Figure 1: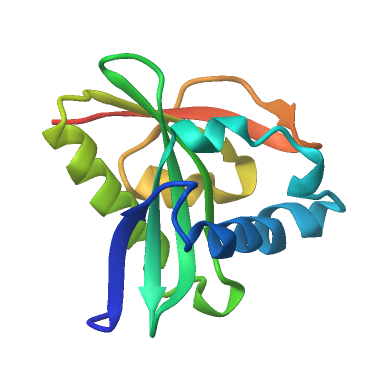
Figure 2: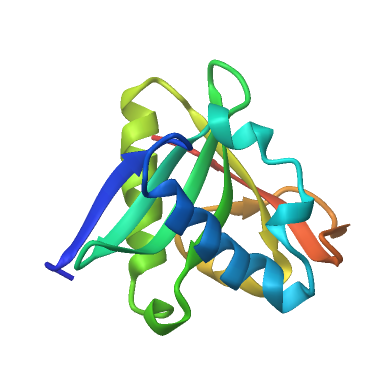
Amino acid sequence: MNDITIATVTSKDPEYKAVWQLREDVLRKPLGMSLANEDLSMDAEDTIFIALHDGQVIGCLMLHSISDTVMKFRQMAVSEVWQGKGIGRLLMTAAEQQIAAKGYTTIMLHARQIVCGFYEALGYDITSSAFTEVGIPHVIMKKVLA
């Protein structure tokens, strides 16, 4: 993992195009959907963490401030060939460290039920009943930062 770099970008940075494409390929195309049909105005307000390998975006995680103490993680995607290799954990850890340093105390996210185990292993708890988002079951998960 020494050849993986974690960085932050905004929707105005050149890397955003690759972030958009990664989200499209990993999160929307498998559902028969497209980001082109969605309101992405919130992206401009988000801090976007990216994982880079040889200059290529291989993972991303969007952070959206809900309040002075609560940050919402959304739209995490890891390139299919890099899934299961710790990229998601690297993104989550880097994001958690940065937001804790900024004084946030709670992280919340809408998790696809199929990946709840990943988040639970990182200390997140399910705090809602299942609900449907983008046509698939999700739950709300939260973590209080120490």
